[in-house]
Image (cartoon, rainbow, N blue to C red; front, side, top):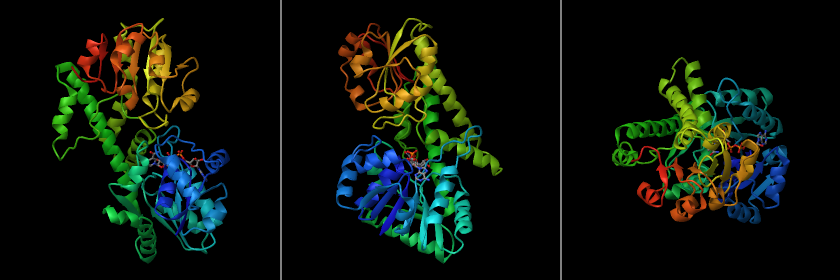
Length: 439
Ligand code: NAD
């Protein structure tokens, strides 16, 4: 089988390379010529563990191609996936569907025969229907069948998530055309039958909503434990143990119960907002999701206040080391990262910032205020700092020797906003140690 993947971002690149690994012939298309040139030259424009070798092997074996020429790739394909961005629309929080609609129209214009057009981007319920209207209007002569196949991979473990997903969701229209589209998608995912991955076949609207419901639920779970953490601090309880005690209940589960600085990233913030807007428009407002959004936003601002308070109420003349800039470990993605909310507020309050991230510094430079000093490593960031703030829980930070960290610093204030270190060990090393919701 041959497919075309429109969009060579985190999702398109990983999905394209993984489908190639499944034995499919894949053309990954991007309108960004520099990205495509880099990929052709064997350079991966994003940081994602394992992606470089997967791309290299499948390119070498002739199953994975990169191009800016959408028309040629589409004409050869049995199915075309849309993996373009769906950011928040400025002003109202709705998903901006302009990339999806533009790409759908380009695909329809280029098509020469019947094909399945699959939306992999996260799109609000009802988008599949709108995409179907676009392709019918542009190409009334062709059988282009629209389907939905939302993606659940996580940056940092994207390849494993795609190759061994918890489930695959496929939304198609009712009737024989929809069944044909379902059959094409099931064929593409056939290697997953060997490991008994559940394939959930639904209507398009249901598939679209599953993705938003899952993300909003996870965002709510994080926000819930963050509020429990705040309560723990007031009443002398330990959020780590509370989360463990809750999570051992099989109905709750242990994942996504880690208190921290509030969720960020390329998905949760925009997807919760878009779901809230969709629900309002549909006359079924989701107050729980709306509250989650508001609580999470406020939390990011509070994190900077915590740092200021830990430093005695003023940062004037103080140097603050920040470890971790990406929104989570094992990625260079800075979209809605806590660092973007915290660092500018620390600078406004008078601090000099020494920052380090193992993968995201190039992206961070373009997004953070000028004047941030980018260090060469964690200990270099800590050098001469009055306070150190851990914002992203990269493994290499967990492994730092507390004594060496302490010796590198001028001051002794440590804010572990991801609860990665043992409070007793850090206090023994001479830190005034603050974490989230722990004793
Ligand atoms: P991204 O911004 O990293 O990549 C999108 C790419 O599409 C860009 O390279 C852009 O140049 C390209 N593009 C846009 N319009 C195009 C066109 N008409 N023709 C060719 N290329 C075009 O985005 P992403 O993070 O990969 O996310 C893509 C979608 O997947 C979003 O809807 C997102 O919500 C969803 N998603 C993302 C993740 C994640 O972890 N990043 C996980 C699951 C789902």
